[in-house]
Each structure stands twice: as structure tokens, then as C-alpha cells.
Length: 220
Image 1 (cartoon, rainbow, N blue to C red):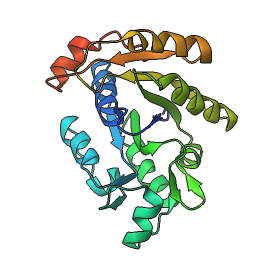
Image 2: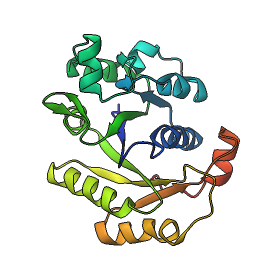
Image 3: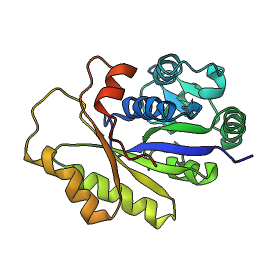
């Protein structure tokens, strides 16, 4: 039996659109006949895990999908310290093992960007390595994205982590400026990392609209 794929969704910065992209990817993989699971190992406030579970119709237990939750919207290492929660990567690995047994692909949404600390000495990048996951980077389209995205790509390469590709996300309903119209192509040329697709501003955010507007994603 072939092992399921683990794809870690990280971002270049806050509010880049990780949860929306994870949902979009889940819908697109499902449309290709794959049984999709999701995981949000660390969540500080918010309802990302709950949203993904409901939106994708996933039956897995929420405590397996999201083993570590803290109520404050701050960096995980601080949120856990303030809530007296001890992060343990082995618990994340055990939960992922359960999900991999049930699904063809597991989309793991990180908490923030690559170098967000989960403890004082353990980062999202370390978790990616320990989960043996491929990485999809989510980036904004606007000004500043080239710098943020190349820094993320370079750190992933430095650590020897496998990059599956880039997804750009339009998080606001605005007309595209020159940077927003060209950044994805320029970053692909500068980095050599494939752009898998661009998620437009989606309203309504539902499966029908995703399949209509994101059908040209390069997921193979």
C-alpha cells in the first residue's frame, strides 16, 4: 500500500491566506479523486481547524486535527507558556500517523510562517522536517512579496526541505496593480520554484466557486 502524502502549508507572513489556500487545495485534491485529510497542529485563537473540518466534510476528531490549542492570538511559544501548555512534537506525529492511515493526502496548515517558534528552541521549520512533509508556500500578491517569499524559499532550501511549489492568494477585493500582476512570474524566475496557482479573491468561498475559478492549478 502506497503511503499517503503529507503537504505542509506555510506562509510568507501573517494574513497571507493559508487557511483559504488549504481549503482550496483540499477541494482540488478531492476533485481529483483523492481522499483528503487536514491537520492544524498548532492553533492560537481562531477557528481555522473547525472551518477546514466542516468545509471539507471531514469526519476526523477535532483533537486529532488540532492537538495543540491556546486561546490567545500570539506566537505559539508565548501562547503556550502563558496557558501552561507543553508542546510535544511526538503528539503531533502520533496524530498525523492516524490521519495518514485514513487519507491519501494530509494537508497540514502551519501556525504563521516558517520561522514562527513553537517553543523557545523549536520552529515550524523543525516540525516540517520531523513530519517529513513537502512544503507549499502561500504568499500575498502585493508589494513586498518578492522579499518575503525569497527569504522563505532560501531558508527552506538551506534546511534541505522539499518545496512542492508556491501559491499566491488575493486576500482582498482590489484591482491588481503592477506588482500584483507580475510578482508571481518574477518570483518563479528568480527562485526556480514552480507557481502552482493563484487563488483569486473568492466570494462566495465555497466548493463550486473554487472549482470554477481555480481549475487550472498545477497539482501533479
